[in-house]
Length: 160
Image (cartoon, rainbow, N blue to C red):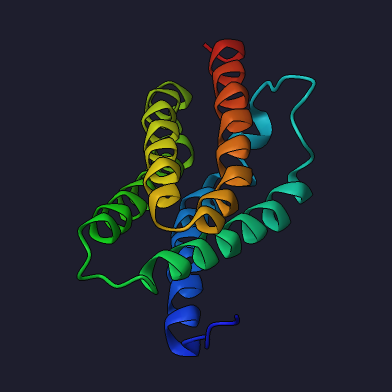
């Protein structure tokens, strides 16, 4: 009934996702204390202290999701496609931080987050074919990025 957990693969899956978050935070930290604080933000903008625990939780869920798919065997075509899509959305996740915080461009970040959202949705759909649990674990991420897209859009509009 219970599968044996490949601990090293499990940890690698989570570390990959947390590392993506750490890379993104490099761009954020450089302008978070200055540029970002000066932006006009919508009333529904969460306090800054919310972002770290939310993203840490989401990256951890993403890592578990990746692990569940990876455990089905990289030799299978549907797993290869799923892992590719996962990597694509993870790269887009990092790129958003570069565009929004690094280049200080809410406009470019908004265009990019639409691509990120689509890549996450495609990953959820592909993961569903492999592991429904893996797919479900990405739903909070998809919902948060939906909220982030709305927030990004409002910041762009309010500051252009």
